Amino acid sequence: MTSGTTEGAWDELTLSEADYRRAGARYRQRRSFRAYLFVLPYFLPFLAFLVVPTFWSIWLSFNQGGLLDSAKYVGLGNWRAISSDTELTGAVKNTAVYAVEAILLVFTLALLLALLLNRYRTGSNFFKLALYIPLLAPAVLVGLIWQFLTNFDFGFINLVLQALGFDRLNILGSGTLALGTIVLAEVWRGLGFWTLYFLASLQNIPEELLDAARVDGARGFQRFRRVTIPLLRPMLLFAVVIAIIANFQVFDTVYVLTQGGPAESTSTLVWFIWKRMFQFQETGQAYAAAVLLLLIILGLTATSFWLLGARRRREA
Amino acid sequence: MADPGLTVEAAADTSPHASEYSRAARRNRFFRLGKGLAAYIVLAVFAVIAIGPFLYLLSPSFRKSYELFSYPPQWIPKTFYTGNFATILHETSYLRWGLNTAIFTVSVTLITLVIDTLAGYAFARLRFPGKTVLFALVLATLMIPTAVLIAPLYIMISHLPGWTHSGVNTFPGMILPMVASPLGVFMMRQFISTLPEALVEAARLDGASEWQIFRKIVLPLMKPAIVVLGIFTFMFQWVNFLWPLVITTTDDMKTLTVGVASLQGQFVTNWGVISAAAVMTMVPVIIIFLVFQRWFVQASMAGALKQ
Image 1 (cartoon, rainbow over the protein chains, first blue to last red):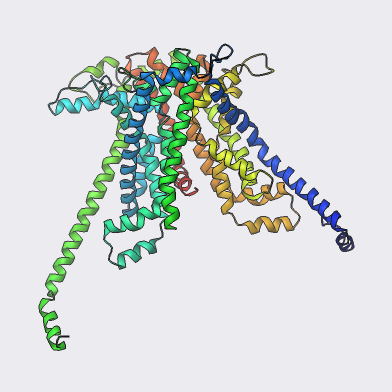
Image 2 (spheres, helix red, strand yellow):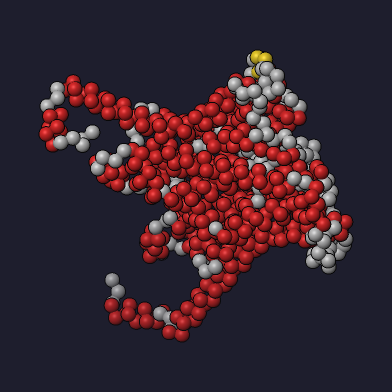
């Protein structure tokens, strides 16, 4: 644009104000157009495969059918059907119990391991690698592995129980133990990820702040409570939000380990949706449950921001 | 105020002797050693918990299934039985599933890298109307569960508008819906925002076009972020189960996750065969992981800091 001769460039300066404004508008238009070209390759699949299906799902939750046949409008029928469905309330409860147990357990263990790895650096690479390996296993394999660990006849847990003189347990066949097994399986898989996440966050804390606290006489736990935790808060907020979104969608391990059983005791929300959609062909109810899941996740995310985010603003 | 002489005397009286100092120091050292030992024991226990179950799978994969039920258990088989692996190779489409998985994960990763880098650059450095709104929209979709999308996506792919045949059991049908994930755009935007703006400004003043700036200035600086996003996307798609489960109905289009899950129905209690499939699936990934371990660990840690 400015590649003309010096003379030409000076001539441009003598344009009228309106000309300048028009040239500016033309430049901005061209600039925006180019920017849209950068965004477009992503936005085509984004709109087609993310935004449209979301609204479509919401619309279909007021319809019956739609998967193999055409949809038929039924108003609030699906919502009424699932609101009085004890299997759904059970699934919501199971999902919530699972998510709370899994998140609390994995965060506690991961924070502990991250603190240890941050303090004791010798050989920490080996431990990082070891903890990472379960992450490489798809949930299907995690499920298989845990079937081997919990099997009545040859499972490791039962062999240990027997060696210690206890009775063998039918772990996955028990209404009280099956959900716990799914929690343990998912915690086992996710521990490496969250340990590395917290370790990165800890290493991001300026050493001087901890040193200053040490000089001021703060003991180990006081330093952790008063310096480390407040500085970790933004990382913790992100971690909580991601963990909620991921854990409320637990499905793969349920599919492989228990198929929702015994007696629906491990039926989670996504399992419920899956069963209604592909086994019972009750697609309307499945959509309603899926939209319910979306609403739950939105609500919990907003709550996390409100609880953890607000305090950060006050302290800043 | 007390007499200064008196205080000095009192202080001298209560101050510990040199020997007490050294005893305290020794006690301190002892505690520290004990704490270090405890820390490494905890770490070692969790390392065993993480790796142990994989090793536990090795044993049944080399034994005949009925041998599993012997008691006391025989951990190390006397004879290595390789029939389970042969069964997997000859009686299932295992190798085909492996190929499908490779095509699926690599394609999704490559497409994601290209389009997310472009969009991330625009959101971080370019100016256009509606930028804030569009980016907020991208962020909001982070919260949308896959279960909400799965059925409409299935409907879209199976009755592709204007197509005479459905996209079920085709690679484009499997791959394209998975490239819309918003996480990469978010990560790329965060990373590009940390690059010095002066570089881009300087190139712009020198008359470089937006594409030249992106290609010659920004892209070379983005290698670390591209590696991080590449590994993240690859890992997500490698473990992806729900979407391949829905969109593949024929045996020869399954991915490994779906295929291995289907073995449970085919070889109901043939645990030897099932564990052999699990071992065959894990060994290549663990090898890839150990070769590129530095990148994997760094990617996870860098990913954590990009928020």
